[in-house]
Length: 143
Image 1 (tube, rainbow, N blue to C red):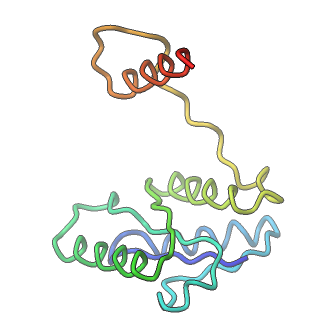
Image 2: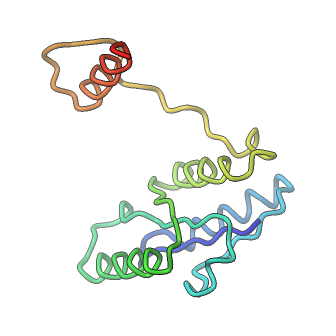
């Protein structure tokens, strides 16, 4: 199984590549990780990760490079997952993406579930996640 990592300059792409490669080696997981391979050759990989622009203040150059990568991946018909987070959190999020595609290593790759902020229906809090949970619950109860 092959994993390709893409990202604009200063997006943490190389740091993620090194952290992921190290994690996989330490855990004897035989996945091949590619750091910014040729987009034309990405069709031969199983998972494509794109580093989000959350590490530094985004510049126009960085945003432009990110949009160019996204556009090239979409033009080639390559599905990708955007990975966000600082340091170890970004690695955990990348591992979570891999766990879905590599169920044989899911126990090692899977992150613990992120705790929900929502604890019950509330008519006045205005929290978007709370409203989404309430709406989802109401829709599922009508079926």
